Length: 429
Image (tube, rainbow, N blue to C red; front, side, top):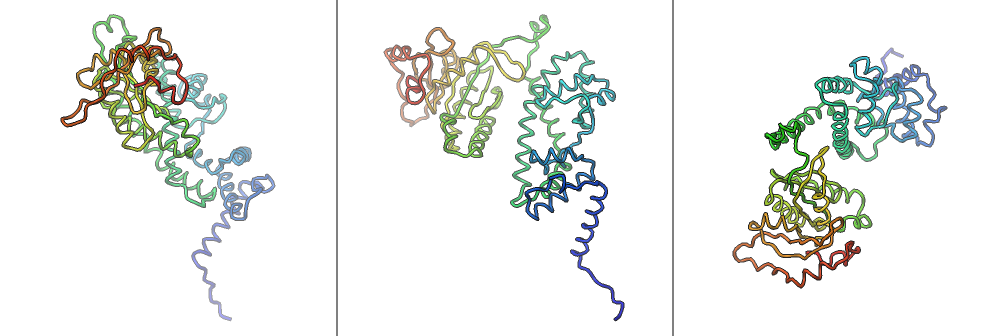
């Protein structure tokens, strides 16, 4: 017969190449993954995909102990992402490179809300080396270590939420039905390598914008210059808003649907918080706002109630109080903050309830009705509260009349801690 060459399809050639590559990888790593128990309980397709992934990781320098731990914790598919993000240095090595003490490097990592490593654990990447140099520069400028840790702790809280959101976005975008571990691992690693650097300018831009806005709002007058620090307390209007019955929804909605409700509330809260009103935080079913001006924050509360109703979310209620409060670590504290929270707790669903001082300061801009006097936790005397509404437009039906003094006495006799359910709303606006 003639010496006619045998022709192979591209697929056959590719399969042969991959087979030779797998043999080479297996020879390089010298590990019997089957004997190591890393392929137990898998179907033939799952087994082949995991074997390929294990061989790739072993060839990349991942130890058998690391592979065992990843399989046991069901995170083998994410191990390549960890490799892309680069945990190459120990705290001791970073100290040698930057001059920042290893103990402080570990303290900073703990303040970020991350697990505390040992001095010789390889959990730090190139970004951590750059961060250590930056922290040393900050300390050398005169900022105290205590302040650095406080800043780091606040940063960690925000970054934890940001990272969690990124992970969820990755899953929604790049996770496909029927993916194998190898499919997920290679796709996620490729996307992490491409997209992670792109988040750096986004984070830097957001930080710069917030610092600029903080500087614009800040006041350093003669009194502050004489004291050598900013005012401890300042007159502040505080507003809390929460979704009524959100907790009980847990028995009827899936966790994903609850998360969608909370996310939508956060979006709406951010929409209504335009200067001078500032959104401090959202936590699940609640949002907190502050302002140094009365009318804008009352208007924002009313707008949020309407927006939540239009979005077909559970009904919102809001409470406002004004008085001394102080800011620390991105949050606000003081009796005024507690009072606003308690006012929210007695508000009727769909209403905005405010203290007498808020009503007096913003009175002419809104329609008000007296809601009664309420016994609130931590307040010795019953507190007069008023319900805010928008001023009626021409042709609108009349608003409900203010309540009589008799109503005031009845409400002030309410118990300090209303019971759950219908009785909790009794005496609210």
